[in-house]
Length: 350
Image (tube, rainbow, N blue to C red; front, side, top):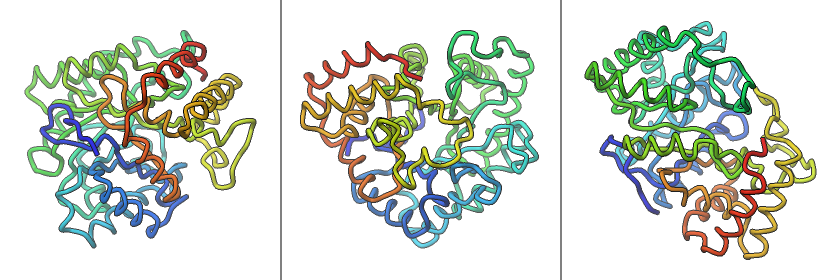
């Protein structure tokens, strides 16, 4: 396993981050235990979760994933320091999470305390804002004029960010969290947090995790360039595009128990004609080089300049093994050349 610095945090994280959002719906405690323990044997030291998990989000499963991780930690307290544990506070929109309220400094403190209780730990290594209070062009909304969000009360949102940073600072000072990060945010959002942190001597965001894959690479190069120059860890989530890049959904297939058979908060917006064509082409490239589509997709993501650690998720041990194996050896230049030809044909399928 290879490791990279987590931005300015001083922490070193594995190039593979174990995602956990299926734990509590598609996976139970026994499954999660097996995944954690196997990942640790493979050198993975980075686990990502969130207060709103399991996915798909429902009131009855809110906090379930953190509780599952906490159950494991309670039985393996001697291994807590071996793990870089990341979780997130939910943004506004869910009536059962703080009555749908936006993220505030006070809500950060409340959410941190609740996460610590569920996780059964004294500290969180990386505490992230799951999505911002303002509307953001993610989840298929990145097309020009696809949504009205530019200039939306920017001064108000800057004031909110300062309040949030002050809440995070209190949690850092008290030792409840060690470092702060973002999720599902933009260059403007990151820039404002960095500016406010410097102006007011508040904690710096050390990372940002956004959706990034062969099918959705909109953060290259501008956000990733900023991350590299500002020493911010860039953490791709869904590097397999919710499993599409494995090829299992080709031709409208829906394997039993797979993610695309479950309710999707934003719908199956990734399921487009061009997605199917792009995935079929990537599967052909993988086959021609004698590797799996999973190896191709995850290996490509790992070699992108500026990527720190890719967040993987699995519902079976077979999938987890295959995912981690994909990072063992880099892709050859011949494979990368063939990938590039497909990428230029389908740069943004959804």
